[in-house]
Amino acid sequence: MPMLKIFVGTMYGGALDVAEQVKPLFEEAGYEVAIFDQPILDDLIGSPTDLALFCVSTTGSGDLPGNIVPFARDLEEKSPGLDGLRYGLIALGDSSYGDTFCGAGRHLDALLEGQGAQRLGERLEVDAMETFMADDEALPWVEQWIDAQQLKVA
Image (cartoon, rainbow, N blue to C red):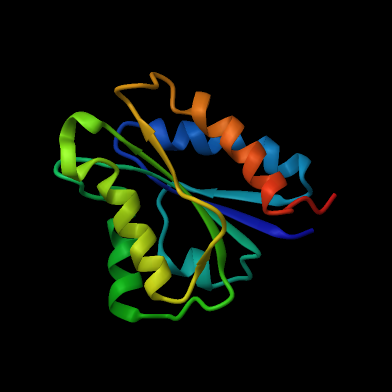
């Protein structure tokens, strides 16, 4: 059974809630799923990762939440090279912050691509100004993502 790892960057739990809500969709598609709410780089590269999903909220002025900062810092500093990693990204933000809207997700996306990882499809950006519960947008996006990227294995 292939392994999907969900990496969460969250301040108040919204991104973790999204990860927990979408997990069953991947299990139904045939994946073993692990959620990392205190992710470190070794969680990604220390064991096989067939597919990764990043659920990241934005704090402050487009900043990464504290729980995922060590992961991002190590990704940047250690440059592990992620050729062959396929991933998706759900970014949570608030458009009232203007230019920094979903800044953490965009930053992490750029870091992953810079290491050679391949994002499958478009990044989902959820705007708290338009969507009260992020999973209301994330669930249909994940269903469509699984279909569009032909990710079903079961």
